Image (cartoon, rainbow, N blue to C red; front, side, top):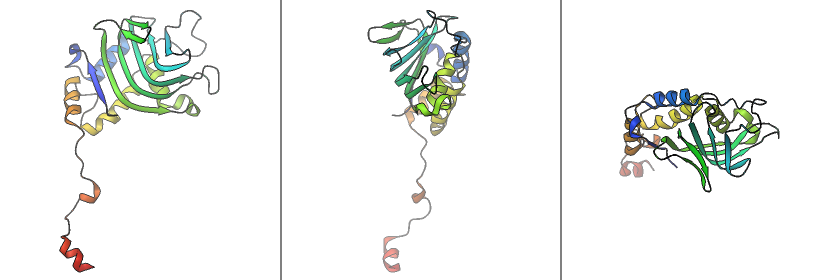
Length: 200
């Protein structure tokens, strides 16, 4: 699966870096560090399971900002290594006015601001908090988008753009496809077949 993005026209001329900083500032820190979440005030959850599912979503306790992480995700809770999110992460969507429905999590009409699909991240439980999936999602929970931005830059490098580019510029680069790189065996002059036959 290759990287794809969707975004509100409001942010077309914004760089992805600026947008992520704006979203993070509005989201704030949900403070889901161990021992900090009180019963009844956890604003996040999985779908369809209690500790695993195809979606994990969280609404900020500081604003109506939220995110949805999609893939095949599981949470270890108290099993060692404790409080670890692991599995496969395919996409992250950011916006506001997030609700849980019978078929998953949805943003309010027109409230999904940006979505990044084709992330292709995978982490094992044994990787603990060092796993890429945990780093990205847990970062978002704390209002920190640096891990997501790092993943995006790794993927965008093949297209000659980065998160310092505008959404419109990135969309155009993705539509054009990866920058062509000549395979190693194609570099240099090709020897004529007749010469090869003589050499044999």
